[in-house]
Amino acid sequence: MTSTDDPQPVVRPGWTGRFYEDLSPGDVYRHPLGRTVGEADNTWFTLLTMNTSQMHFNSQYAAASEFGRPLVVSTLTLAIAVGQSVTDLTQNAFANLGWDDVRMTAPVHAGDTLWSESLVVSRRESGSRPGAGIVTVRTRTLNQHGTEVCTFLRTFYVHKRGAAPLEDIRPEAATPLTAQPPTVRPAPSAGRPAPSAGRPAPAAGRPAPDGERPGTAARTPR
Image 1: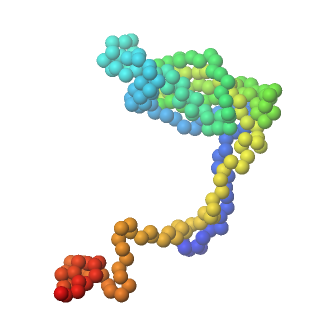
Image 2: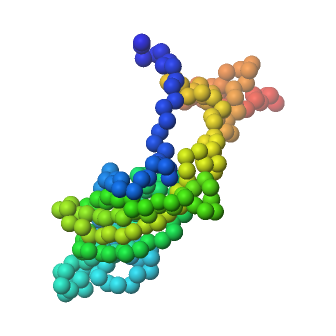
């Protein structure tokens, strides 16, 4: 096969997340992505959420505390932990029902890298939504040293496989995807008239004859 050949397209399904049937009590998911928290992350999240505690954005103030430097605001740590778990647990969830037993077990500082893992604690069918179930998980977050910094229970609604709200929502392209780029016809430049069919336009840098301006009709001598 040469580089100019079009390969036969084969659609490979991407990761679509887990469903209610896939989440069994006792399963542990070690979420794949770590997240290093920066100083700007901490400051922006603190101020975005209208938190006025200087422990999170005033280094001089925090230096006088027992921690000696600013703390990452705990709601950011919690948000990262939940976000890290989505790819394994709740990509097909449609509602969180609650967080319980939330504990911040060690301080987090700018520069720390967070990793999370979750244990499926329980699941049950939904009495009101036959296409979904309710799952509870225990998630914990570790820093780069393996120290636990956060733990909580989370309960959520998650779709069953084949649920109606997930069917046929991806649009189809008007043309198939190929290895070759599509042919695009350049649009004419706006505001520039095409040269007259009967007379070529004067070359750039050459004055037009008889004092004529380029692109205008010749003047009749008087």
